[in-house]
Amino acid sequence: QDVILYCGGFPDGLEPISNLADRLATELDEQDRGCYVGVTCYPGFDNKSFNEQKYTGYKKSGFTFDEVTCCVRNAADLLFKEHAESVSSSEDECKTTFTLMTHDWGVVVGHLFINRAIEERSFTQHKPDRLVMLDVLLRPNPNSNYREVLSGIEIYKPTRRDYLFALSYRTAFAASFAALQYFSETVGLIVLAILGTIVFTILKLNPLQDVDGEHAKVCTKDLKHYLYMMYPYYHMFKEMSKGSATIFTTATLPLDLKETPILYIYGAKKNVMFHDYRSVALLEWEEREGLSESRVVRLEDSGHWMYCQEPEVCESEIRKFLKGREASNENGGRQSRL
Image 1 (spheres, rainbow, N blue to C red):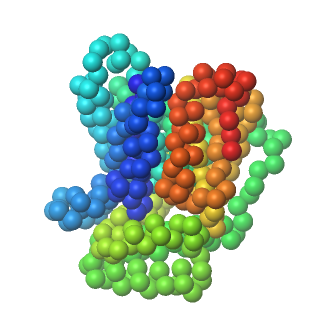
Image 2: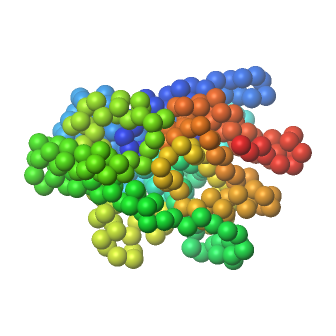
Image 3: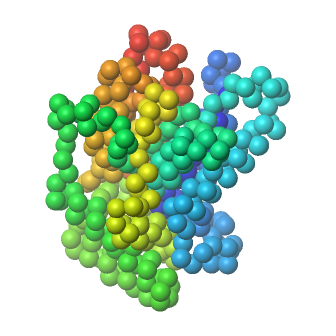
């Protein structure tokens, strides 16, 4: 049975992924057994637990990427413990595979989790066999031969406009959380209102399009919670201020994509993409050359929350990916791609 652990990002708790998680957990037939799915999120992002605990249960400074990675590791341990109690025989347990699925900021800790699990086998006994990355993808592993592989391939180079889109809202969110941490909640909300108006209303630098509008409105209903969930942006700039040796040095694609293949699904309806174009090109090359089960799925009619907008397509693609070589052989040696 496939065990899937999902970790989302900003500004999501446990609810947005529930539809897709339920779909993946559903048993279609005897040959297509439902997955055992666990859902987690960044500490303090879950609506229910945040409203119950406020700051009493969470660090006012937020959590570092190292801390969140450890949380995901602990969640994996708990998920496998629960799964072991649910199976009826040792045979089921032996056939278990582990897939880590992440979205938005969850992708960062996903990259850290898998690379540390590979480098230090004792870091966790549950090393993901596959990765499903949703709408965010970080850079290739610097120790790989990606430069040589991609040397003859034309790859899109982000423009100044792309960098402006990416930097503006991240700066606004990081500054707002800093005001919350060093001054007060009221000051943080004022800073958010001012910078948000400048970035999104005056300069019109929203990275998202209307297709994501309804989901964004739901997320911003509780502005105090929304403000607290901005701590990853704050810690991102803290990491960047350290110079070359940052947490993002190891937050990369796995070195061996054959050992740990990646399914990357992203929505095309955005004003700026949240992936490293070199990584996308590398995964597409891996698929084209048949070197690994890695592949890229682009959903033309979806945005950042593509798994909410097209859950049936995401479910289908993930199930094909989990079948691996078997599905590839059924399709004449190649896996389907949108």
